[in-house]
Length: 88
Image 1: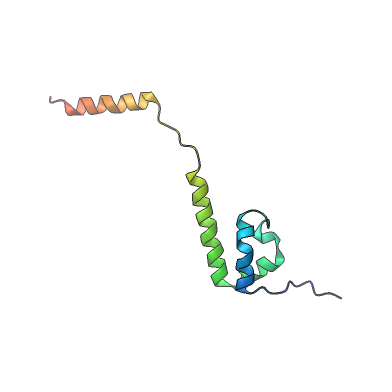
Image 2: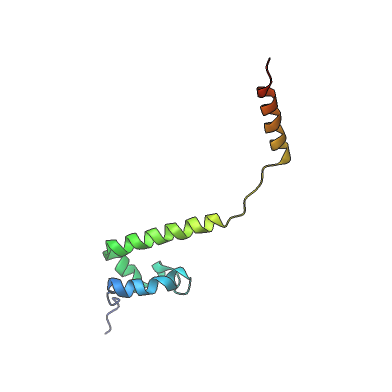
C-alpha cells in the first residue's frame, strides 16, 4: 500500500518551483499537494508567496487601461476655476 502523503519539500525545493508557479506553468499552488503541504507548515515560504502574489496583483493593476475624464468634466472644472478666480 503506498503512502498518499506527499514528500515534504525543503524551502530550497519549494523556492525552486516559484518561478514556474508565477509564470503559470505549474498551475495553481493549491492544486499541488506537495506545495500546499509545504505552505501549511512553513511561515517563511507562506509569507514569500503572499508577498509575490501581492506584487503580481499590483503589477496587473498598473497595466489596466486608464479612462480619461470627459471633455465636459474639464470644461466644468475650467468654468469653476474662472468663476472662483474673479473678484465679486
